[in-house]
Length: 301
Image (cartoon, rainbow, N blue to C red; front, top):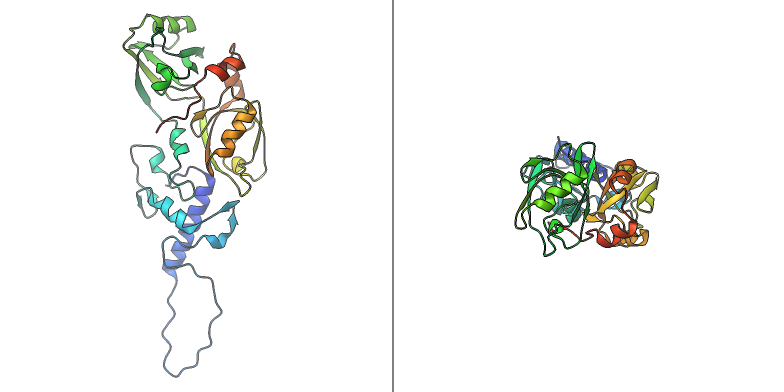
């Protein structure tokens, strides 16, 4: 069974499959005996013999302007067998992406399953650039400071810290977690981390007017446009935008978020978190601190 980053990818792939199957099963026209009159049949739009037929005939399909050559290139990016993706080491690599293609935003925003080990050192001020938060007997990252060792190591807002230097963090208080970091060696701190368990990503596509179809205020999604790409792909209201194409936007002004959305490519991946979890996560942190201290850089992939 194929997986898709967005509903648009699924629908376009189904059209491709249907047209390719039709082209393969069409009965060829029988030869006409010499001297026999045969009226010309009415012209019927037939898909070409190519596996990837011309999609431009669909026009503004789901608000997208489709280009056959671009779709061909996108499908060729993933190893396929009968147009079904072959699993690879990356969760993103197993997806069929005729519309999204090799969009870098979806890779920057990826929430990977499983655990990873992160090695940190302290800066000249003996700090790693993290603020932690204890939630439901777990320890989570509340703030990653810009240009800090934590930011350089790829840690993100919402990551769950499972171990610090081999010690399990389950049930720890906030003070105990911070004391463990403070007491750790300056040159080596080993963390075991799970990627952002309270967050999820949604990939959507801009329509011909450059919109994906949601309205937000102070970073919180307040309403959805009917039949827009955001609504089609499962965007929900009362959720906060945490990242756009992997770039953290927590604490930014709405005008700054708008600039990032406007300059984003046609395919866009938004990372969101439910309102009640988000507000608990940033409790006792001022908007000014989030805006000035949080790492808002574009992650490398």
